[in-house]
Image (cartoon, rainbow, N blue to C red; front, side, top):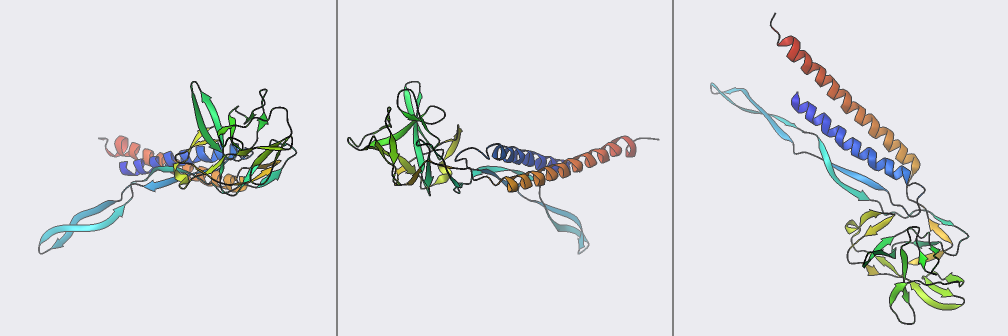
Length: 259
């Protein structure tokens, strides 16, 4: 009976964690370039059940009844990198990647300039003429004159990009958007602000659409269905815990009492 409590409670813990992830997905359904997460759950090792009720040759021998699961536990949180729908806009500073790849942005953390990666191409030009994201991180590009990697400086000019991310300012080709890809997406880690941190990025020639944004890949109907299913599963485990608790209470206070 105590084992049953542990099993039901482990189910409540995993379902609660799953609810948190689904809630976060739903909250970001309208976030540009957001990729949904899902929780991988695994079960504890099964326990072998046996007794010595079987009699053979006048002796009680071990009799294997079967096995029983001790419940579930959290395994890992995985991100679905399926591309979202691309929607046209009227802004020159909006970009979307078709297919694989990530934009590269640079964040100034004190004395260090850290590079991060994103599918969110909702950019704008700051007061210094630099192309930045909504968090103020600088969008990186390759200078076509020096071949150096640097923040894209638009100034007050008119910006036009071709499908390969080559950016012209006032009619002169100046930068190429620095897009990268990864051999193993499992190494990418979400750090907040719709950014990823990853190892060993490889520069790629991603197809880029200007005046467009990639919507999140959240299917809100599926997410709501998953939420309802998860809540019902949580409630089922909760009722099992309550039932076992009531049974234990009777066992201790009624069956074991002396009259």
